[in-house]
Every structure is written in C-alpha cells, then in structure tokens.
Length: 431
Image (cartoon, rainbow, N blue to C red; front, side, top):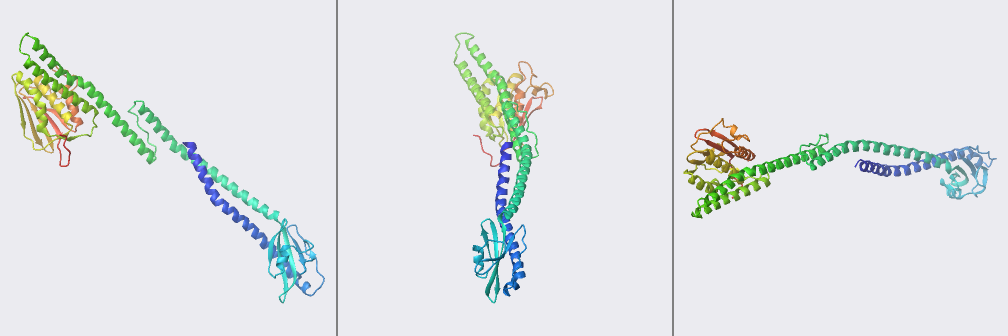
C-alpha cells in the first residue's frame, strides 16, 4: 500500500510539473530568442545612426568595431558588402530589408537582423547584424536545466511527503488488519487502536462493534446450549416416569399414561423449538406478544401435571397492554417459574398479568414459602432439593436479554414477578 501511495504521488507530481513546465520551457525559449533579436536590432540601429551621414554624403566608410558576440556589416542596396563583417553578398534576411522594413531570421548557424537606411523614402544601404545561434541555445539550455532541477526536487520532495503520509495511513491500517486477523482467529476481545484519522477510526469502530456482536452472539449460543440440558431434563425425566409408571403394575390401562406421555412430548418439542429460536435470533428481534394466547399455550402442558398432584393452575389476565419481547424467551421464563412451583411450591399456582406503569408484569405465585433472601435463588449452582440451580438463573438472563427483570417479589406466599417492556402503537405483533 505504501508503495502504491508513493507511486501515485510521484505520478501526480510528474504530471503537474509537466503540464506547467513544458509550456513554461517553450515560453522561456521564445523569450531568449526574442531578447536576442531585440539586442541585435538595437545594435544594428546604433550602427545605422552612426554611419548614416557618411552613407548619404558618399564619403569613405569606417570599419564597424567587431565583438565576440555579434558581427555588423553595411550592404549596398544592390546587396554587396561595403564594410564590416558578414557574407560578401546579401543573404535572404538582407534581401527582405530592401522593402524598407526591419527584417530578422536565421541564416545558417546565425541569427540575423537587417535594418535599412532610408533617405526620402529611398534605400541608401542596409546594416546587417548577426550572432551565433549557439549563444541563445546555451542560455535556453541553462534555463531548461534549472527548471528540470527544480521539477526533480519538487518530485523528490513530493515522494518524501507521500512516504511519510503513506506510513501514517498504513500503520493504523496494518494494525487494523492484524486486529481483523485476531478476530478471524476467534479472539473477540480484540479492539482496533485509535489512529487519529477519522475514516480509519470509524472503520475500527465498526470492527469493534462487529467483534462485540459476534462475542455476544457466541456467548448467548454457548449459554443457551449449556442451559438446554437443564430445560430438557425436566420434561425428559417426567416422560421417563410416566412410561415407567405405565409398566407398573402390569396389565393396567395404558391410555392415560400414553396421553400424558404425548403431552410431555409436545412440551419437550416446544422447548427444543424455543431453545433453537433463542440461539439463532438477533438480540434486537422482538415483537409484540398476545399474552392470553401465549399463556393458553404454556399452561396447557402444566395443568395436567399439577392436577395429577391434586393442585390447581389458575390464570388471571388483568392487563390491558401487551409486552414487547421474544415469545420463545417469555415462554421459557414462565416454564421455569412453573417448573419451580411444581417442584418447590405448594397448593394452587396462579399466573396473573397486570399493567405496571409503562411496563407489562407477569406474576407467578403458589401457596408455598420461599427460602433465602430471594437473590440466592438466581445464582447458578444455588439449589434446593432436587434442583440443579440453573433454571431461575437462566430465566433471569433471558428476562434481562429482553430488556426486562425477574425477581422474587414476595417470599410468602412465593411470588415471582416478570417485568417486560410494554408495546406501543406501531410495534409489530409476533402472532
């Protein structure tokens, strides 16, 4: 990446200097050429003024002083060299000056300027001044070399700045790439370091959010997979007891036992579906629950079990609102509370729904007496007789994942209260 940034900067600098430098180089060459012509014309004018009187009076002509830079000569209108330096006969530039206008051009390896001497509109002579083209080319070459040096320095400086900028950009990207690699290797605690570059920091923030989401999803799936054994253990144990009781004593009517086993199997199937749903759904995937329909489905599998113990299950819907949560999670929470009431509770089990300020409350109560301070019940591993100490802890985790709360609201008679967010107008229903 660094190499590409440097090459791109060098190419951009080269293009910019070319677009600016080439026209400038042409302008510099034209400037020196025109300056040389102007200087030769000035020399020719001065020579013409100094010799004009002698030419017009037909007196003897003096020699023009020569120099290393230019050569000056006087030509007759017919084209013959009268005095000074230059070719013996008129060249094309001198011929052009016969029209009475200053002429300039190249003759061989020289730059030539011819100035006519006029009297009453009549041509009396022509002053020719010339200088080697190499002198002008040398000045142009020196200027071009200086411009090329400045352009090269600008390109080198641009590359150095680009290298520094590339390093500043590449370092955080390399660290970000390393963090992404660690994330791909399963390290979800990795976080992208701040770079001070807004775009890269936003990309790092997105990577951090992705890592947190993946870690949370993986944690939930592992937790639900671990807790699934607890959620399935109770209905499986009940099914086993029902099947064993159907065999003892032999010869009894198996219809009731088979019906009970089928009911337990249905509850087991629902539990499996709920666990799979909770493991795969996004955390924010919540809908509006119809509480009466949900409770009707939940209590159907528990009423027969309580009846077989000589106990009753009563549902008292008093709420006008509806909760907003995942139906599978609420079903499992109520199932855990009913299972707790069956194993540890006494007497009638009552489920009550009610409105609680801006929330929806579900109370699950029995006529037993709770033990402990109410908080120990939700600690994994804390158990009463015949309990693994996982169910209530799992139920609280599910409630908090839905934005709610679960606690022991009253120890005697034992009452657990589940608080869920209340649905407002516009929320979709899950049924």
